[in-house]
Length: 376
Image (cartoon, rainbow, N blue to C red):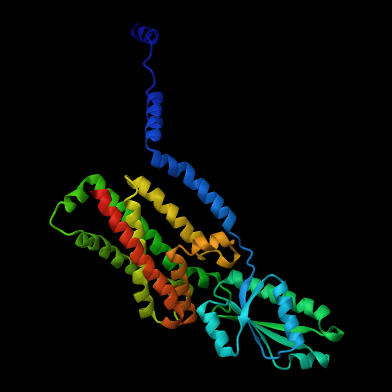
């Protein structure tokens, strides 16, 4: 009898719909989270879909023309016409050629020997050499295919009697064209960026949520001491992480360590502090840890995709390359690969190191000022 009565009575409304309506109202009030869910993915899709390209063109190339003949100039023109090479200048000797490649102002070089024209006139096979910076396998593949295309075109049209033109390609720094040699050193910079930005932003927001940050502010400790106390432990964490990646990269992937590790560790300090400053800046723009994570990834994704970590910057449109110049990781990747793969010294990396230092000072200054205003 009791069961029949219970069935006849009206059932209470399901709590699902009021709860759902309440969450939508809360989402509408939290405009920052709503904007990050809708606007940021749209911006990133448009930017990365437009910028990411794997077909490398216009590899910066210097020419060492020891023949100085009409035939050698014609060969250089043919190579430029392939679209894979962008002639950025000439060099006087092989020492200057090496300096240009080590400095990163050229990623390939064309060497035409003195007897190039003489071999052509005698209907003998003519030879030329293309040296490529093989640290980036994608750029190397583009240079190799461009050299082969130029040799085929010149052999068919430019050499009397149809004699073959032998263009020999010599890859530097990564002769086996292994992608791990290119990717693993870059992981040092990428993982440092992810760790420093995420941990710093979320740690400070977490303290603000718990109320412990306000307690620190009202103590006699100065703002400078407070900021140093927040940053220094993460600097040590960054160095431990960097050392671990280098050791594992050497053991697991046989990544070359040709340059000075002490120089790399010194320069890395500016990069770590710059990312900590960016994480601190993120913490001043958000109120919750979820927002800190979302906004941090808005800065992390361009670091991964536009800095040259995965895709050559030469293949990107001009706008994407300009955006890449605003990322500390772009310059740190150049330093990493120059020191580890090429064995270059401070003379080749000082410009990138100076830019990193500027990023460090700027981001720390902005984040500290913003931090003070937010807490106040």
